Image (cartoon, rainbow over all chains, first blue to last red; front, side):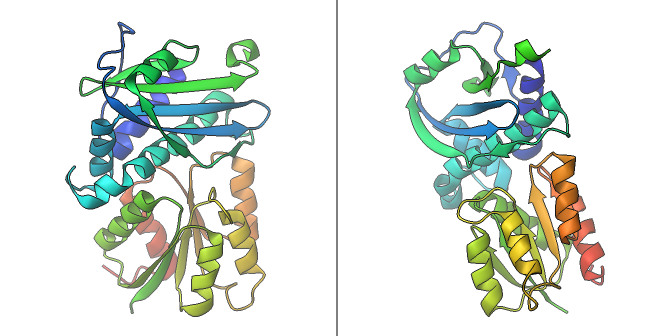
Length: 154
Length: 128
């Protein structure tokens, strides 16, 4: 999980100029927020999925930073889901290389957007594979699943 | 000489970022065409004069590998340089793409300087 968290932090820093910190408390604040999420799957010797859920305000901020625009720019408002999917896509590609090396072949799906309530994200955060981050005091969830579980492959 | 460039990526954000990086790099840009998958890219290539294609791999309808295959099988498109910009990290797949005839591979996230160097190397570096 440490490697996955490290990859996500690096991708967010490089693409969105945001600096996620892993939540130490594991508590999930602001369950009243609406979240944008994106999920994708990967298939290879190991298969699994990755989901990223962020509050709408963080989605706008990361999109604005990604594009060098203001958060209220119409292009930012129209493309927050798209940007979130791209962050997830890049995270997934680099996570697989970090975990399995550059010799493993994986097929990645196209990221699919979805909307979640804060309560739904809080439930997901308690499941295995969930890594909770703070981004500018907002909760951000990265959820990874592997089959077979990666712990068993060590 | 102004160069016509085709961007093929299903992400509007990525296309906007690449467009901005191209403009900032000082490339003498003519037309900048945008497609959301390989099929749309081929439709543009059939109608427009394009000097360079920048394409993702993982796209719906038609991905970047099939786009490369179709371009290399078409005498009218075979010579157009192709740069693949993708999250792909498998060395075997990247080598396979190079063997198919792509001119360069950039892994996302890429620095604007890397894009400039790549485009310079392919288009001759005659721009600023």
